[in-house]
Image (cartoon, rainbow, N blue to C red; front, side):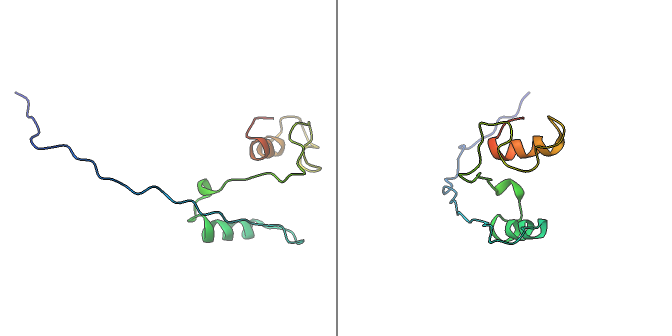
Length: 92
């Protein structure tokens, strides 16, 4: 014999999530990992998954070397691959 649930199935209405935009901007000094982590803690709820990386307008995403650093090593190397993911969302 199987038991059946009695009563009505209900769903709770939830409010849509709000999006807050905050920017970590280069101010002329080197941005360290500590700076990035502090930004994530303050503006992204401590979760890196809440952060979107948007390339600047001067990034040449359609070229083999979109920025002047990080692509001088082995083709398909770790640094080039990670930068490719961040800059274009694609595997280099």
